[in-house]
Amino acid sequence: MRSWATILVVVSLFVSAVRADTLDDALASAYARNPRLNAERAKLRATDENVPQALSGYRPQLSAALSTGLQGVRNLLPGGGTLSDTLRPSTASLTASQTLFNGMKTAGAVRQAEAKVNSGRADLRAVEQDVLLDAATAYMAVLSNQSLVIALRVNMTFLRELLATTNTRYDAGDVTPTDVAQAQARLNRGLADLNKAEVALAVSRATYVEVIGKPPVDLVPAAPIDRLLPDTREAALAIATKEHPTIIGAMFQIDVAQWAIQIAQSRLYPAAGVQASALTAKDNDPTLSVTSQNIASVAGNLTVPVYDGGRAASQVRQAKELLNQTRIWLERVRARAQTAVAAAWVTHKGAWVSLAAAESEVKAAQVAVAGVQTEARAGQRTTLDVLNAQQDLTVANARLILAQRDRVVASYALLSAMGRLDHNRLGLPTPDYDSMTHYQQVRDLPYGLNTPAGQ
Image (cartoon, rainbow, N blue to C red; front, side, top):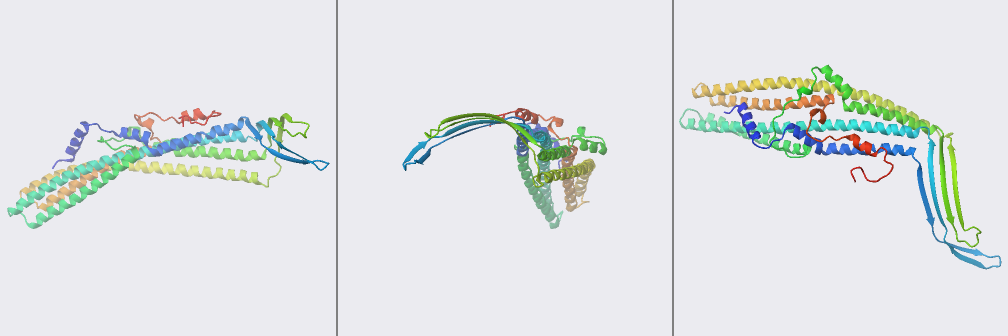
């Protein structure tokens, strides 16, 4: 039987002969194509628009009005007669208004909108982390399932050869029908295991396409990213506390809640503004001495709230309670991040142990199979002994494949738990999506219906 090392060599030689995809290629594809990540980017671009909407409160407001129509008039004269006419009155006006003071409502709205943008950027980073981790998991799932299918096919070759040999020995009278039945049963079990592995491979390929955006093509074995990981769990926890995007996003949500208090309090302050207007009106009523009128005016206004039934005060109290809720939520987010790091750290270290144990198990199982086969040919072992040794090797190979997968995925999971799983730190071969670009394009845009992308 071919060893597991031989299988890896064959796979590597085949991969090198054709175009292959690396894990970095798959992650870059997910970064560019994943619909969840692209939807989050669109959500952030929509959040960016809150800033120019808030800034509009500093700018003057202009409005124009035009009215015209027909008006039927029937007047009764003193002598009993009537005078009828059809009038065509028309009016045109232009009004400009400027807020001078609104209790700092506009300033609070601008700061709140900027805090929402910062929180949205942190949310985008969190989604990027989730997508890249899903992509790494999907990549390793396809790779491990492919290796498992190859190993089980090798096992099937061995079982078929053993069944043929057992049948030959039975015909020669060296073994009993029980040996033949045992070999046949193990062959059928091998067929079932192979079918199960092929189904799992098909499912993992579909998941790969969903997450990464294209079918897998001759995947290259991947290595863990230990170079990006700290040496101690304490260092990993410290990094997560400072850099994890969910924590950063929750901190900006506190800013959003704080500015909401100022916005609510602004309703308790006076509001002042100035308004200028120009109006022209025409009327063809012959009974009027004036047929047209032009009016221009400039007026200042001051509104002082006296009592609104307690609504504004309630809104202030409500905003303060929401701030308290956000602060409590931040502590929960921090605790969850620390728990995730602790779990990822233990899993990562455990993957080292599992991989080393699986490699030793495969080596020992290979030696056992070779020894049992030799002893069986000498009549010292039964067919069942050979089948059991081969089954142990097959299970050991499967365990090694899963340990290799878990070893790589655990390293990416730990980096994600720390908040550092992003395309820049991984050095992915893909153009960078800069969320600041759209923000700067629309922040001070006073007009225009099309998006910067031309939609």
